[in-house]
Length: 319
Image (cartoon, one colour):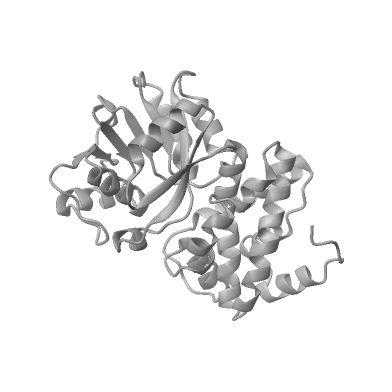
């Protein structure tokens, strides 16, 4: 089975390493201008995973896609449209595309499969791979559970057969909309959790997890999905890796932001926050935690003041 992984970041590199360990023929594609990709190609390691000689590297997209039966994409969510435009100029016949990213397109509010569908032939298999897990844990031999979801049952079945191994137990997703929105929004909750850490109010994380899940469940339901998906692996199930883990980019970003410390790269949840608020407005769902994160990051409001305002909201039933 030939698989091309597009993206040489931390998660994309792990996916390539993991699939290579399952005896798949793996090629990693990276942009020729990417220093990260160039270094990975030269050293065959990023400090977290090390590649055998069986893994190939390619900086030509057409060449990387040629012969691949599965194409796994792991790049920043806001870059997906540009990549799909490039891929639409190439043959995608007989390929299955898997999106291993968690986000909503900020400019349109579209889910990532909706963006991809604009450029792929209708017969192309398209799926998402979401759920909890950090590279550092997987490479230490700690297994986890994840989800594959797609509109097509045969696509889910095919991918789970190909991707299952001792490190990851896959479940069949039954709500593509809910799993995509849930996976994307957990990054916003992760930023909020980091802000609590930065304010030395970690004790509030339990309330954050409970109310955050309820907030996203209401949105999923309003959008036409199954609200119970918010309580599954794609959202609530990913909270440990996002809300508590020292490896979480979004949590670390939120913590450093409220402390006024520089953070090297913008967390995925920053763009997702605005996209979530657009969806909330579109579907008439109030998203107070998303609004609070936005007020701190883009509104310039003090995190302590925003937190106090959340507590001063009118009383209401828990469910």
